[in-house]
Length: 440
Length: 105
Image 1 (cartoon, rainbow over the protein chains, first blue to last red):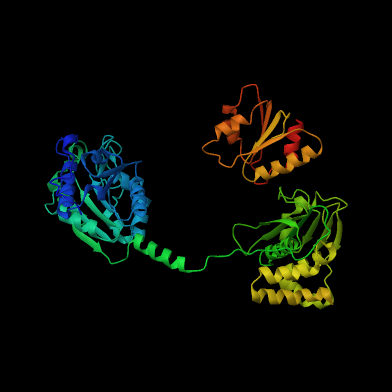
Image 2: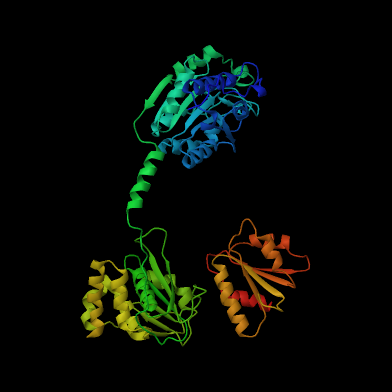
């Protein structure tokens, strides 16, 4: 509250207003000043954030704080100011033009119920630039950009704020005597508040469309856009909700990352690049993770990349794993040392890679996927007899086990430890069961 | 930096890892080469970049685009410096070999 009484919140040194004769903007600024006066607020507790357009000339007429930025973005600045200092009363002065340009900011501020007051100076056109049509321009209106009449459905700004959950929504005109009271109600509301204030742009819209005060009121009735308070909810403001969830979160234990300490050793002396190529649903990526984690547990350096279509559970699934005694700088694979093909989709996907493989490289393939166009040695994936029952559902985990046995990059126990460390208990139990076939 | 090198490689992001791999390989084969990883692309660390250009006759800039950062370096470097881009826009990482190839020109 103000320590002293202010008769006005208008910076009188800057008067008179530079608005056009008959423009409604001055009336609304007077109503804002009167509203601040009846609330007894100290100017230092108030921030007026102005958008672009004639309404953007307004901030210099107030003795409060002010902020002026890009067109359509005033609501975002105001939201940020309020988040940083919730004790401030933050008011946005924006036109119908800004509400069009920054329409989604308006929607989201209403949805968030962020505790700011948006006063829309809605005069149905872009006045400052010569009266071009805006999102609220009435149908059939003549403007420089709709010279044969506007064909666009006018946007109902108050209605939009209302259906998007704005806490306090009202519609008014610049001529309303009770505008200061309505502004006070909006500002006192703990949440998003918006007043869609209908106005006259005497320079352009009024002159071209025979649209005076009387016509505006009759348009309001005709559109069934009644004035007054349209919505008032008890929904907590974004600032209140946010504080609540922050306090809740601070009581919880911080998340701790998974640390894979070296438990095993390896004799690997040069990097090995492995590609597992299968289909969605085969858990190929998980198998890649197991190999990489087992290597990490064995004191090696690894990178693991996965490739799959944007849509999941369909198409190929490829895991690329680089395992190295040295840090892995380049994590790509131009030519794999080892490739395992476990589904036709994966085989096709990595055909460009298997083609580059040399005699010294090895391709392992599941049943029916042999005859790869490549110079690499090619062997079928021969799982132990006891594993036959698991091939259909768990071929990736089996392939990880098979590669661990064949390539001897790290102790087999490291793979089992990786399963225990990185997989959920239920999955780990299944996979440890599957891996026993290699130990018979 | 490598004293006596007249070639500087400048990179950032994931391509800088390929640059590191290329530099390691080049140096192990006795080639002189300096490298600079830019961690903050914007604002452009002009002073740091300029101070790395002493005695540099050639700059190699690997980046996964059409050479957007190369333009910024061209703006800073002396016009006698030969600036070479290594660029890929096919979603695949730039390989260390591509950078080594650019080094050997």
